[in-house]
Each structure stands twice: as structure tokens, then as C-alpha cells.
Image 1 (cartoon, rainbow, N blue to C red):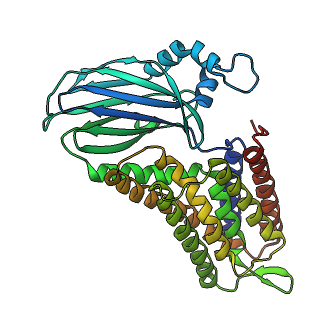
Image 2: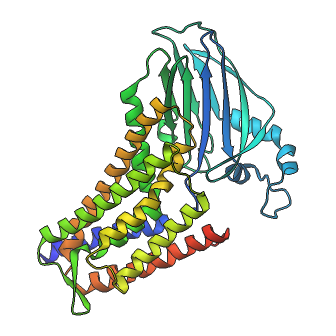
Length: 388
């Protein structure tokens, strides 16, 4: 039993420590994304548009020449050539095995949910295949920011005739091929499912909110103090209510926001998400909603759903492709959550009766989470840069 307990401590502290170390340098906005739209016309012509975040380009190229924290149009225009060369050197397309030639048109600036982006029109000279055919494929090799940010994702919207599909490029999936004559429904579903799993795993604010609610799930509040939960069944039911409420809530607003029914400012959403983490962690120290944490999970889960939606909303997919992306992404988020719960709950339950769990994990862990989330709130609400 002592050996199992020691192994449990190693596992639990390893899990919490890994999340803390990864969360400390995490940015105070959503993960780095670019948006690549490619259109294949019925006559074989190919063209596109590439939206790349100015903050990411600044990190790579130093766009802010005077170092005042703002990128002016003059600073951006002065480096249009460097931006185009940097981006095009990290994207390759081929059609039916023959390389396409890429060129960039005049750049503009547009806003996405998380800030300003340069808009790079793409002239793409590919071998013409009018009308396509069963063997007509478009292959892409995407390496943007691969050497600077392993979390960067390229979100593709590909239109070929009446078909629209989407895909996600990452370091582990940098090269992908697309059959232009078939929609590849299952492949799209799996792609967005993987992106949903990844999004929850790198969404440290979402994870820490969920963990803050789960930490006392293996305990009960009696006579002004936390005591070990008597049965695993009771702890499991508590966790089930919390996760179900969170899932239902963020699924509702993820769907509503992605479909364009409700829109909230990104700054408000991200700031409120950080505040929800602070409040959930503080509730473990001064319990006000001991038996009603599922209500907090539902209420704040509505806001977290808007955060999840930012990835899909910026893709601008049509209704049929958007519905598929929404289903796949949401399923991925749920699988990512379940994986976290499956690791955390058995370890926490095995160690719930120890003083170290009460003081080292529940109390000290909640303080650490609250402090980190408070920094995130300050950064998001007041545009500060407190963490590197």
C-alpha cells in the first residue's frame, strides 16, 4: 500500500507539475494560428489568401522597428517584401505531382478574433486540370513558424468547385494531400477531432479551470473543513456532474458562436475565462459552492465555449463544412477532457486522505492556480505583458 501511495504521489505531482510548468510561459491569448484559403476553379485555375497574425510575424521578423509595442502601417509596409518571402518559403503546393509556383500580391490588414493579421493574396500557378478527375490531387507542405512555435497551426479552407473542406496543419502533419474530386468526410471529421483534443490540451486556462473544480471532488466539506470522500462512487458522480455541466455549457456557446448566432468581444471572453479560473481556485480555499460546483461549471462553461469557438469562427467555412468541423472539434474537446479526468481522478482518490493532498495539492495548488490566472486576467483585461 505504501508503495502504491508513493507511486500515486509521483503520478499526481507529475501531472500537476507538468501543467504548471507548461502554463507559466503560455500566452495570454489563443494559440497561434494562420488562415489559409485556397480555391480551385472548375477551369483549373488556383488562387488563395493567407492571413497571418502580425504578433507572430513580429516575433519572427521584428516588424516593430521602433520597439514601442505597436506595429504601424508604415512599419508593416516597409517589410511587405520580407513578409512575403518568409511566408512563401514555408509553403509548397503541387498538383498531380507537379510543383505549383507561388507569388504574393499586395498585402492588406484585417482583424480576427485575436488581433490584427496581414492578408497575403496568393497567385498560384498549377498545372491546369479542367474539371478535375478521380486522380486529381492537391498536395501542400506547410512549415510556417515551425522553427519558432511548435504549437502553431495552419487552418486550411479548400474550395474545389461546389466542395469545401478544411484541414489543420501542424508540425506532425505538415504535409497533406487532398483529392479534389471527393469531400473526404471522415478525414475531415478526424482532423477536427484531433484539433479539438489538441486545443483543450494546450488551453491551459480551460484545463486549470477544470482541475480547480475537480480538486475537491474527492473530498466533502463538513464542519468547516475538507474530509475524504467515503466512496469512489460519490466522487465519480460529483466529477460526472461537473464535466457534464461544463460540456453542455461550452457545447451550446461553441455552436452558437461558430454558427454566428452570438458574438462577444475576444477581450471580454478571454478575460472572463481567466477570472473563472481565479474564482474556481479560490472556492477551494473558501468554499461557497461546495455541492454546487456543477453550477459554476455550467455558468462559466458558457464563456469557455466562446473561447473554443474562436478557432472555427475565423475559418469562415460554409454551412455544410462548418457543421462537420463543429461536430469533430467538439468531440475532440470532450475526448481531451475525458483523458485528463481519467488520469486525475483515480490518483486523487487514492491520495485524498493524506495531509499532503489537503495542503500540498488542494490548498497550495489552488493558490498557485489563482495567482497564475490572476496574471492572465491582468494581461488580457489591461493589455499588459507580465509573463514572457
